Image (tube, rainbow, N blue to C red):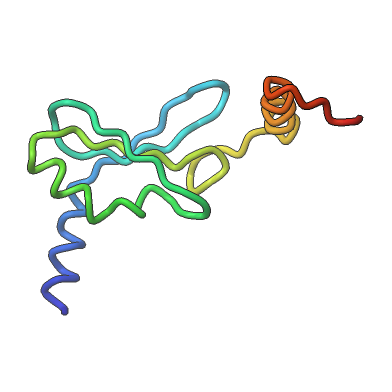
Length: 101
């Protein structure tokens, strides 16, 4: 068990981290490997490291693996609630639903 844990830590050490500015938010990205891009998006309530076991296999297979902390999670900025509410309202209107104010 200890050697498996050590190997896992060594693999995570090879992951680089960066921040980008996108849509007014500062977003954290974890990245490993070179080649065609594979974008891994976590679910609720996880972070980029939900994919930590896939990083080494994909990067060794010749892919550039990128996993962000999605909006409001981990080291990525949390959007203003009005932005989230506007997005939800826009979706509901797109679906033909008109929520009352």
